[in-house]
Amino acid sequence: MLSVALVYPELLGTYGDGGNAVVLVERARRRGIDAEVLRVGIDDAMPNAAVYLLGGGEDGPQRLGADLLRASSFGARVGDGAFVVAVCAGLQLLGRTFAVEGDDEYEGLGLIDAQTRRGERRAVGELVVEVDGRTLVGFENHGGRTTLGDSVQPLGVVRRGVGNEGTVDGFRAPRIWASYAHGPLLAMNPWFADLVLEQVLGVSLEPLETSADLLYAERVRTLVG
Ligand code: GLN
Figure (cartoon, rainbow, N blue to C red):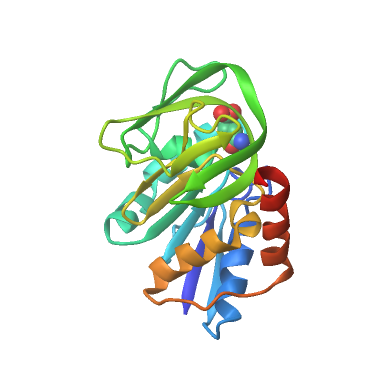
């Protein structure tokens, strides 16, 4: 059974990123793989899961989310081999520090060498990122600008929008993917959902032809040509 943990959706769910869990589970099931969503509320213990999803959130909830995650077994589970997909606030709090409204610096989980500072203006709009020759689409809405340490690999190169700081978006590490793209990310980019599933399950998957896959192709044609 593939277990997908949706972490603190009441804090990190402002932008519909809970849909990422639905997409992973549904795309696994359509390949005959048993899968379930474990919804992890702020009062719940961190369950054992194959993959943890961290979504975007507003500044206050993001701070609380970071505190709760730090006090939980999340870091230990990631150290033990769990996978993580993080979006926006989720991305920021995996880093060493992040700055949100009213704070110069707030402590992140320190799982990735990245720091987020306040930008001069919010980044709001379409986000298009090239990831290994493929196109990732979504929308962004964030005040933070993220700088990666020298050894951290970005997820991809920004073709439209801002991402981390105008040139690259997100980061990737063994078993971790992070992006500024909402949408939700995995609903708007079915190929990326399948890439995550393939890594988590250790299998290769045949493509699907769902309406999400067709819409993705349409969106890329409109945005990139
Ligand atoms: N609160 C963070 C920021 O504004 C993250 C926002 C988000 O998750 N969309 O930078």
